[in-house]
Length: 205
Length: 248
Picture 1 (tube, each protein chain N blue to C red):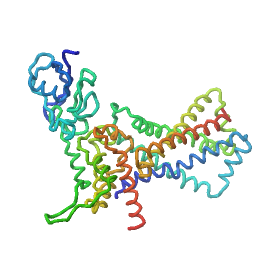
Picture 2 (picture 1 turned 180 degrees about the vertical axis):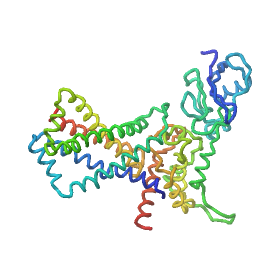
Picture 3 (picture 1 turned 45 degrees about the vertical axis):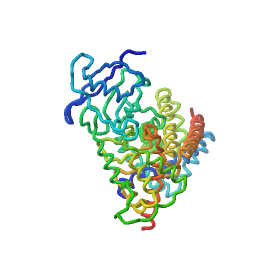
Picture 4 (picture 1 turned 60 degrees about the vertical axis):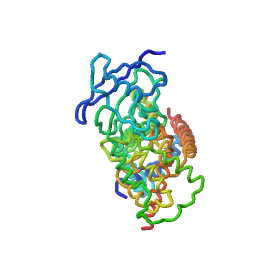
């Protein structure tokens, strides 16, 4: 067993636990956008009220995410392009890599937009107003909306498809039949999480 | 019925020289395959410009898709040329050497890396000495069915040629060797070094380098369930990882 093997396995694991689970929790919180500004801000600020919030975020989200993202980028450079083989799984292989880069760029913009930017400007705390005004901006609103739409759907795809490859990497789904079952499960997960995310965004569209 | 068939062949005169394309047009023969056409070109090595050239070099042996020697890219996709039927191929037929191995000459490549991978995973039955070991173990029909399917691998290289994770820049073992490690890890005698095979798979170039593109299983001419083998070996190394952390 060498460090390369361990790193690959940690990369595979962190994609599901904790980063994937955090995505699900995060998408669940966003449904509160439908409850209006007051409730939404209360829910989000409620999380940050805990003195451990920043530590939980750093240990559970930022460090695993950072590792997953940067090791993932390294992996992309190991790929060679094989255009003659047009199989569905091969398409998913590339979509997983492309969505990974897209989602990483989105997350950087997203953390800047919703956390660092408002914090530096001293307006941190009014999350709902910040998000909805960004979406409603007559000039940049359409760009913000498109970036969020692509970013959120990309993240959901990357997670759902990642669950599929995770089950093969760890030897959970062995036979082609069971791999089909996991694929169906991951498609269902993609549909449910996408619907949830789109519904949440519709509150401030 | 066409009267002629045209082949565009990617040629290379020696290991270190550059490659070039050459076109050959030969008389159409009903039910011919790529190898029989290469034999026709060999018998009359005149390219479509009418120039006499050196005959195209390729490898072949069994001519019935069980040895893997004649594997090459046919219209961009990897396959054995003995079982590639001219009637089923888009014309002109493009022939190229496999892209993942060093070219020796024309369509002949050096697939040593595949055999080195088999050595690394110790894809053999470990029985030392000439003494009588007694009768072999009796195996269940179900076990035999899986083992037979896995043993059909001819190390042709289709799986690694189609694999986006296998390249000259890395040392990935590839699907064939991973599948063979599964075959020998389930063999009643060969499994006594199962852990050593898992150790190899847990090193750089091992099973962790699989990217789940699943091209291998689609490209395999013997329909070996390679992704099932990779998942099974993934399961075995997951167990070994657990044992390394909590039991060692």
